[in-house]
Length: 503
Image 1 (spheres, one colour):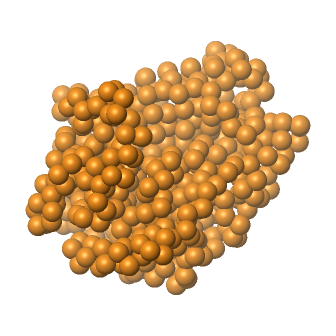
Image 2 (image 1 turned 180 degrees about the horizontal axis):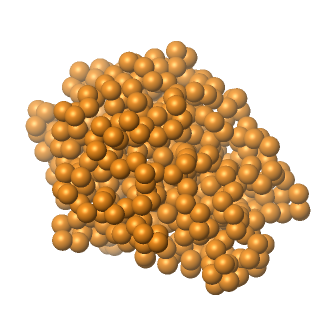
């Protein structure tokens, strides 16, 4: 390979996105942020929509910025985003509507009604997926129940990253890792659960062949190449579900698919689970409400979606809207929140982070206080107490999920790898080590972008496989280690017993 190759990752989250350039010299990967942009849904007549034209404009601006910096020397580009949301194309590939955000209320109660048509157990047997009301299946069922005409005229179904790859390359494809978040993909058959969709009267002709991570879709569209100057750049599918890319970046030395470690991709959500060489669709996984989602290198991610730092983010947003200021007199920043949390008494009250009350409240601190009151616990009386309640509860949920991972895999898990931006919250990382009584390794922070880039390197043949990619990541990025504090284990054990009995 040349002395250095540059790959471009478009890493798009629910609140922001960025373009990351990855420079690889055959041994070491270095990152460079090229462009950052905002994202978020807009409420239009009571429905939460994503601003797809705005996002596409930002993607193009980032490509132009990359070309201005590196010329025509970018090997490839790939996009990763959140899961479950989608775009529908009609005749002549016309975009029929801006996609609806998964936090929209249109799926309220839909999942329970769906079980009247197809039993919950049968849906799980066909999909192996965790039941969450915003899964793509229930979004489509909600559209059908509302007699949404888009379903009648749609000709193509593209998940969010699929749509951007289509805009970049002109090729329509459903990428494997994101397809598995729909709850109408059969991981055992490795194909769409067409029979399940037929039972609900949902269209299946709109689905395309599922493509694995590492698929080269081709060159950039001619007009995109000309407008950006990237005439040699190819479009490559990474693990286009952001968690799949994040898990690829875990710097473990274990063999791919080995279950002696667990991961937490920590951000707005905390995605916690194990990497398996095959799907695990059985009663234990169903009872624990775990999910089988696609991974890179032919693996499956057996995991649970846990509400993560969304709780903290929303508390900060609410307090800043109310005019609360930090020590500097400015709106609260993350350092203010860390200081407030540290000053509060630990393990005083708990919430279930995944309770419906916390999915999209207008006032998160009030929702947390109300939940504590409803469950007859001490009500947090300060901002710090609210934050401490949230962080302690997330750590306790990690421990419960870890026990489930061990029962599913039949293996003792020695190490928790936490990756992603949430690793900056050192208090939660230490709480995870103390509560779970396990060694915690954190990093890399830019997990999704790194995983995206390294999958492109595998596709180019510059890295031979996932294990070698992880070796590159271990040698390229710093990690931190958190060990359990022996003096705190007893208190966490007592809190955990109370937590389990309560929820």
